[in-house]
Image (cartoon, rainbow, N blue to C red; front, side):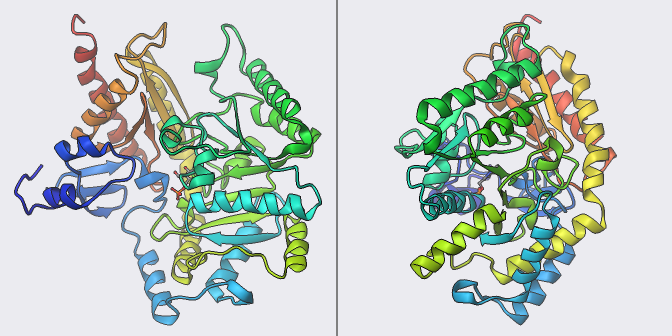
Length: 458
Ligand SMILES: Cc1ncc(COP(=O)(O)O)c(C=O)c1O
């Protein structure tokens, strides 16, 4: 770190409170200042180059230097830099994007609604669900079931949906009417000898018990990511979504698929819902919708959602919900061009093909003494590290080994993220097989470098 008083690092420490950072520790360590990007690489202020193995925040599908997105933004900025969709106003990029998203949806959908972030979109989903229950004359039907370790964002309601302690502690969350059911992580949570199918059946049973205990007439919706992302890249076990959906249909409970990470190709299909046979009533989209070049998110809803909402807005006089920047024309133009690029360059096919190689290479590390589990689908994966393979015990405090290996990986030219002791990989969808080899080689070197620290006696 450059310690001069006017260095960017020193000024960052002086003026900037960071997202998801230990603010006290940051005063000692300072920031990693990223200056530029090209393709799957980013470069820091000291000129060090890294493979961005998290695509930023699971989001930069087309890489960090896509000129066509810059041009789309510039064109729209010159033509109409801002407009909105309040009070029946519209603009062409938003009409085009709404049509595109509804047509792309893997299940019959009716309308798209626009917001700025995944959190806002999930808050909006909750409000739509509550509004619909009132419209249908079912005011008691307000509870939403989410999952422990699910991640749905950080605004008050979205953070309540999120099932991770750091998003609740000292924030006085979760709010009322949000319930959390079990995590579909077979390796960590299954009973000895329990098959994936048996484990899925037990989780579906847990869900049904929760619904019955609360009263089915009080449960409005279930929300889940097709693959849990920030909770540690948890791939659902065999039969999970099928069994969960059977319980939801039995009690007429809505299903929200949070596709914020899985959407637009990550799992090797356009949507995670296709990979896992999910038939949602609401799909929540963000991140790879615009490769995060600009903030934009969307909900796609079916007629079961739209019709009662339309009736209620007619009764009240308006659907009293909207964000100034929701469906911003420049962000919408960038999203349209980004989706065009994903289709034109078959980045979904690339996620499937190069993803298979990423998964195969990572699985070869399963025999490494520090590797507990390798999991993932397409271009999203995690390697969970343990100090003891048999007991799955961590090295000292949970997350210590994850942080150690993540730091070594950065020294070896790869930016990743440790979620506890799970090291995540979610590179841009444009990544090549050669770049995957470089990435996994660096990870292997990092694991080997960590081993003597974890096992000083060998
Ligand atoms: C599945 C999922 N939903 C929602 C969000 C929240 O999105 P945002 O950070 O844009 O509010 C995230 C962010 O990582 C996410 O991964």
